[in-house]
Length: 157
Image 1 (cartoon, one colour):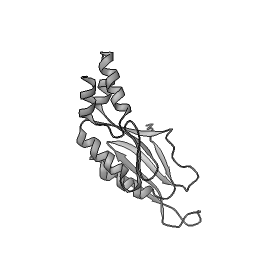
Image 2: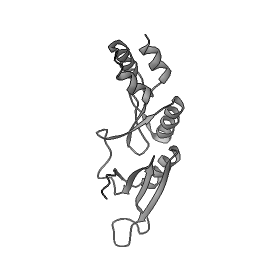
Image 3: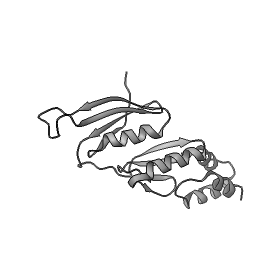
Image 4: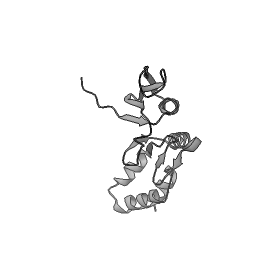
């Protein structure tokens, strides 16, 4: 059976990053941990890779050195329902060295980009009333962390 799985290349903090991610999502778990063997360029017994799941989706985290840092060209898009979910994920991923960005984007302490987007924003952007949609998009463009109440107020004019 084929399965597509994001492969995340970290310098040397894969375990720390995965522990953060698993702590922030309710349906998350570590599945496998693989260690470097003797004779590799990395310390024997140190973490090589970690298989984990977030909301039932598989990921692989790999400690491969600094040659391939993350860029904003790829991000993990997280669709949430409530402001409490937005706040918890935003605060958890920007803590301890993460960086807030515009329009629901952020970079976690390990350099990985995320988008924390409430379904309300997606629905308002697709509103058949172009005025409501435009006002919601305009409000979103002025935000870092998305605020659902402000989106509704803006859409309603």
